[in-house]
Amino acid sequence: MMRIDVATLFPEMCQRVLDESILGRAARKGLIETHCHQIRDYTLNRQRQVDDYPYGGGCGMVMYAQPIYDCCVDVLRQAQEQGRPRPRIVFLTAAGKPYTEQEAKRLAQYDGLLLVCGHYEGMDERVIEEIADEEISIGDYVLTGGELAALVVADSVLRLQPGVLAEPQGYQEESHWNGLLEYPQYTRPEEWRGRRVPEVLLSGHHGRIDQWRAEQSLERTRQRRPDLYEAHKQEGKEKS
Ligand code: ADE
Image 1: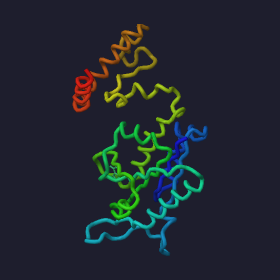
Image 2 (image 1 turned 180 degrees about the horizontal axis):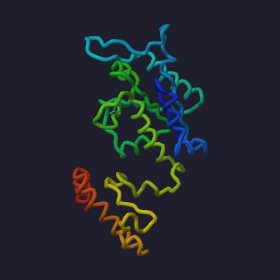
Image 3 (image 1 turned 120 degrees about the vertical axis):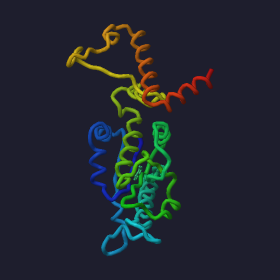
Image 4 (image 1 turned 90 degrees about the horizontal axis):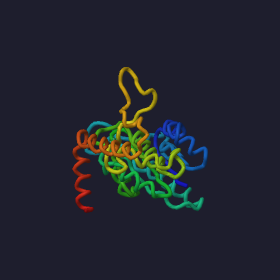
């Protein structure tokens, strides 16, 4: 069973998100486990201060290396004491490796992940050098902290664990699984605000439905994501 630990200044917020909806239900069923840890609990100063001015000047504050490091070491120690494998330590930063479904599938293979969230303008680079196994960015934009990024990674990895999704093939047809965007979906009623569901989907002809969906998937990808479309075509050529 996979376990994800999150080191953050906002453990209640992170835990609340992870305990909701599909992931919350999976956790209550014992299919996955999530634990959030307060980095501030590891400070050594009286004011429980976690950040300070940057050396060299500049705007914003930088998180101290020490409380982040000690929090991670404590999580590793707990894993060892409980006879669990050492979790892979992933730092969430805007300067990390771009995150994709392929990365989610790779991280989903680990028994445990420790997701570490910075806040403010960043963290002391030395804690990353000292303890991070890897650094991930969820996209080319800047967040106020790593929490939302860690939740994105946790969600995309945990939904791939056996039993979490109602239907095991649930994710095999959706966007990005095979490098293409998903075909459009419809449910009742057959007509809504003058818009009809494509006739082929009402035909009950599974061969034609599969073919239509494959065409839609390919055409949408060509129009909306030429980058993915070219990669897909290239892959086809290499295989043949
Ligand atoms: N922290 C701030 N921005 C981020 C991003 N885009 N991805 C991951 N962590 C971040």
